[in-house]
Amino acid sequence: MKVQEVMERANMTETGRAIAYIKDALEEIELHAKENIISGSRTSVTASTISFDAEETEAITNGTSWTDATGATEPAGWSEYEHQVGGGDITNMHFDIVDGTLKITAKEAISAIEKQGMYQAFTAIIGVKYKLSFDIIYNNLQLRVAIGNNAPSSSTVQTQMVSYINGSSATGVGITETHTEDFIATDTSPVITVYVYGLPAVSSGEYSYIDNVSVTPYHTIRDTASGLGNFTTDMKLRVDGSSSNDTDESDNTSTGHYTPTSITSDGQYISVSDTLTTESAGNTITLIGTERNYMDIIEGKRYYPFPSDMLKLVSVKAKNHLNNEDKYREIPRAIHEPLEEDGDNI
Image 1 (spheres, rainbow, N blue to C red):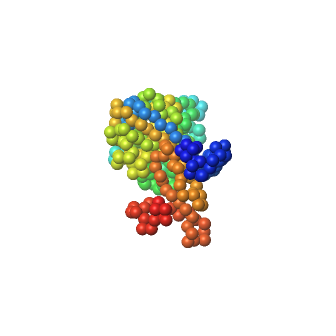
Image 2 (image 1 turned 30 degrees about the vertical axis):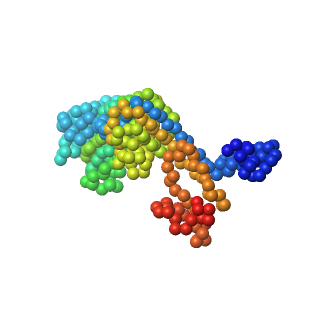
Image 3 (image 1 turned 90 degrees about the horizontal axis):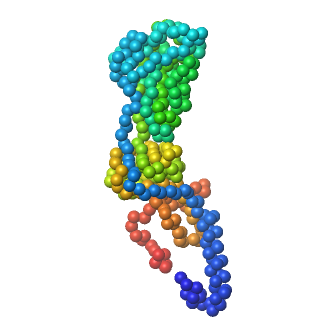
């Protein structure tokens, strides 16, 4: 609207005064916006290099069938680890397959600071989130599971990503404990170690069982052009332009967005806690990340300008005048036209 039109509607003839009033009004609007709108961060990327990976590829070799495990020989794909105080060797642990599980038996007393077990390296992507899971059946040998950046050496078992100690007899003898734990990879070749530590002291002949050792990645969104570096785990993700993962059409999400759990520093991968559908790059896809914005409802104010980049109106809440507890109640969305309209027919 031009200044002349404002003057005509306000029945004013002084141009200078009209301009001054307009400036005052703009300042007032800006003040209300700053006081009553909390803006969240927003970022987006549009590219044909974005793909979706729902393949939960197993990273651990021979963590279920335990092939070649017999007596003092570790399962195929696993290597021996031991540390003895004062040097020398500890009599090798025994690894036997019993009812499909791996029975681990100490064949010599293990005292404080001494450690013994097995380990293997696996392939991972730094910054991507993974899920570790395994079953332990406790008898009388306390097993530990660790994931670190390097293989165990001397007395050091690295635990940068996972450090787990079986709950001993607290879980009950012969009872299967299924443990799951999430971690973010900090190395391209992490090492998982299953071992025994001589605190408390271990007696020869003690044993317990482990089975179903598994490491799988969370579903990921990838951009080979490294355009995801400005997204954060505080954001909600919206996808548009994909063939199978659009957030407003796909059955993958009932909330209208995906929730990121980790983002790689090179801007190539976003791990999400939701289910994706595997989709190769090629389509021009827009990925939008935003935090929630909040706007106060002001007494006597009827119109509220929504941000132009708003993704979704989550809810409208007002204080309930029917209670004395000063609580906010959510206003339900109107499905039909209101039975009573305001006098100005709006």
